[in-house]
Length: 334
Image (cartoon, rainbow, N blue to C red):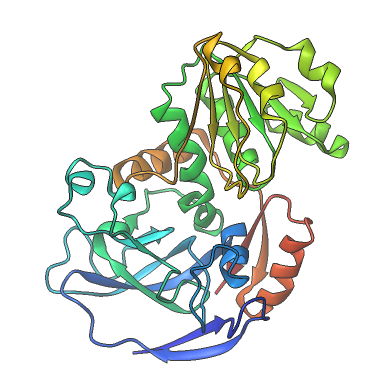
């Protein structure tokens, strides 16, 4: 089966039309006709080989929603015509302790959708049936793609950290990830503080549900909320004054990062010890939690704020994201 795609032929290159053939479908695989695919900062990192694991030609795209075209003979729970989504992972081993324990996203052999294989900036994509998640009725497919990476990335920490509706929480960085975290935590029932360095976002963040907006570069504003927050989620990928944020945590508070900060994070031991505070991180989330997140989104009408581009305008969309102009997620329509 021929696939029409867009690929980078070397690190940092613009994407060009690229066709390839999919071999015979595996017994447990599904082929998906792509309707929409989100554009994520991780796609830019892979295009540029920032993480040192890109292989070229590289077809990015891992926030995929579409329709099942073909199913292997041993596929379970899916049939032709079903509407599904697929995110950062396209397969896992399904026999290790992590997979058997329902934590497939922690599988040591998990297959990345755009790592060593081709992703969703294409008209078709293939993956294991377990990672092709059936979309709930009533979901808006045009906005659902980013939920399969950005959405589950910030939803999972809320669950695994045991965040309660009575908690006071903070979000560092209100971009593609952070604005979804803001919407989730508002619907969760929390009192939400948005940390941002962009003064022009203040009113927009309050419209999204932030109870408070704090300038993350203003020392006095950070000091004013010292010891008040139960949970902080960092969505940025840059080095910050982590001790300043630890100081805003209440005793037994948690600082959790999903931002891929490339430099070591300087965490003073006494800032954690004195208040029994903790620092953690996580990748995406399990298959079951992804399903729960989608149900939560439909129930509360939560979607990313998106800007839509045509798939053939992928390079213009990439430039738009790279220049920091995206408000707040970019989606490509196939």
